[in-house]
Length: 111
Image (cartoon, rainbow, N blue to C red; front, side, top):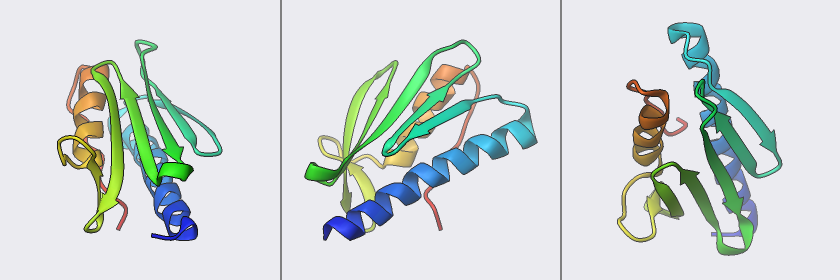
């Protein structure tokens, strides 16, 4: 993958996460504050806990840090996959967000 392809795919992930956080507020009243600076996106939950999503351009990875731990993702076969387990980024993000929000929360890949 070229640097420009990585950048486009990684920015699409951050945009999809931000858009979903906005939807959750509108549809379900779940207030997840988002703060984005370049390739770093912080999600702050009502209890003040955070999930941090950070792009890693030199490695062509996306990193996710949550209460449950840190995860690294590479783009493989059309999906962002954990470099250790192969688990999908959005599945892990949904699970982590659900833990932070103390209720079910679902995120999905951009179309």
